[in-house]
Amino acid sequence: MKTYKRRSHPRVVPLCLIGLLAFMIILPAFAQEKMAHETQRSQRVVLDWDEAWEMAVANNESHQMALHEQEKARLQVLEAWSNAMPTLDVNGTFNHYFMIPSNPVTMPGELNALNPGQPFVAEFKFGQENNISANAQLTQPLWLAGKIGLGLRIAKNYKQIAEMGVEVSEQDLRVQLVQAFYGALVADEYVAVTRDALDQARRHLDQVEAMLGEGVVSEYDRIRASVAVSNLKPDVIEAETARDLAYKGLKNLLGMDLDTPITIDGSITDVVLAPELDYTTASDYALERRVEVQQLDLQRMLYADQKKAEQRSWLWPNFMAGLRWETQAQSDKFDFQEKQFFNGTSALLIVNIPLFDGLAAHRRSQIAEVNIRNVDLQQNMLRRGIQMEVFQATRQFEKASEQLQAALENSREAEKGQSIAMARYDSGVGTQLEVLDAQLQYKSARVNVLQAEYDQLVARAQYDRALGQAR
Image (cartoon, rainbow, N blue to C red; front, top):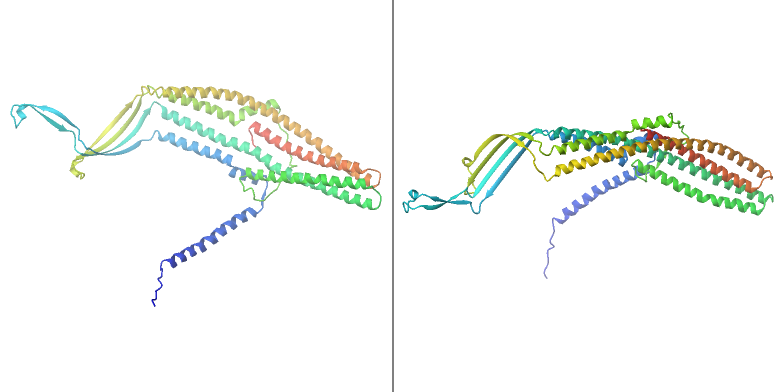
């Protein structure tokens, strides 16, 4: 009987052990990272206005794009400076001839050794099979029709435009944050109002049921109270949904994970100062202060410099100086000896006069002129638009302030009416219809107060934005 010796695979066991060891190392690290992420998402973040503003400036993607544009503009200024710096180029070429160029030349008979006196034709080859050459050239621009200075000025104007763009982005972001931050607070208050109304309706239902048991009220009163409770439940659900959306909108504006729980530390009843300027004064102030007006002024200067630079790209001379070193060698073999290389150095003065480029520079200057005319139109539109913004913001604040005062007065009256209706019903004088109507009026009055307070805050933020100022 044959016996077979079991063959071992010495490489399998170490590879399995290595894989198992790697899995044991990676799995805890992955689990730890996942746990840290889940912990971060589960930790509640408490934000007041200042903290929310710092987070918005640091994380909001639109604002970050404006900052990146500013950084790009800074790099473009450095790029414009590089046009005035020297350039160094190194080139190398290897050329192998499969057929060396030659030229037939008729030689005099005196040079004919085979047939003296008879002219003959000889071929002269130009070069050898293998040719190698290299050169290095340092070039320094001396004067490029003034385009270096124009390019630098264009880049600096663009940098200023980008810096102003960051300021505009911050002003827009502030208005958006006012809307999102206080909008979330309003949503919280609206949920509280609807829940209070539901709790009050339930208490009234309990009271009605107790009175029904004593035979004081009819079954109809209980049904109406029960229906009132049922009608308020969808309002609570709607308010909670609106609150969740408001909080997610705020977190999105702040660049946060949408599932991170947050609590807002603030009040919708913050004091809002009335505008200090009348419409005419505020309009003049805005036209002088708004960054967008200054941006368009710089944009016009930028296009004017572009037009001038393109006009100088035709018939204007360019002067450059340079130093050049070169070497070359020829051989019938691939083995080049040091003695076969011939070196040379030279100084260069380069004058370049562009005569014709297919009218490309002329067309680019015409495009710049069209851009200038468009900027002029944009300036007119912007000035009228600013005046409209100031007018609208002024009127909106006045309207919001008047509505807030009316809403507060109405809320006080509605609260009194609810108390009177409840007292009348408890004493058996009033009807349930009066109670339900009073409760509905008080709920609506409280909601109107919240909306008016929010509208006033937003109107003040928009007024500040229209004037080009931040508070």
